[in-house]
Image (tube, rainbow, N blue to C red; front, side):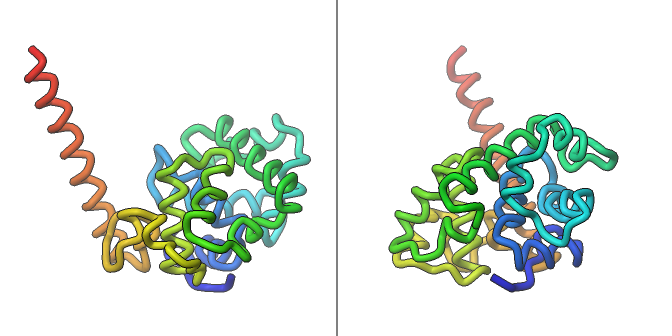
Length: 201
């Protein structure tokens, strides 16, 4: 894994995401309730605060939870909810140590099918089906991990030439398109909820 990603829109952060499987997984984990760029800049910030070039699952898993939470809470905070995300990152790293000897790429290396890969991703702490499908689409579209049936397993996120998620961000222009799509989805969901509420009266 050594590609150029543009998820954080920050060269140093994107460089780490493109070469470090663990950084990519941690960025995906952080990608909720904050802007995408903030989430994907997180792994680089964590590595810098640990005084490291990369993230190490063994080291993070073994850290004192309070100390690690404080590290993420330093200003600027790594996430809107640094304490709870620190806990989730440690749970993810502990799982990787237990099941993949700390090697994040073990989650997808040698996997037979897209369905198998989706199952592995869904088993990761903090990864529900949607997050797993988006990360699977990112692996297939930008990181060269393309087991048989990966697009089908990724659902709508696997569709070519779509602008639905971080899997489709390759620069500022596509970021704008993905953001517009997300706004449309939010507006549609809000309208649907309002219609249901009105219909129920």
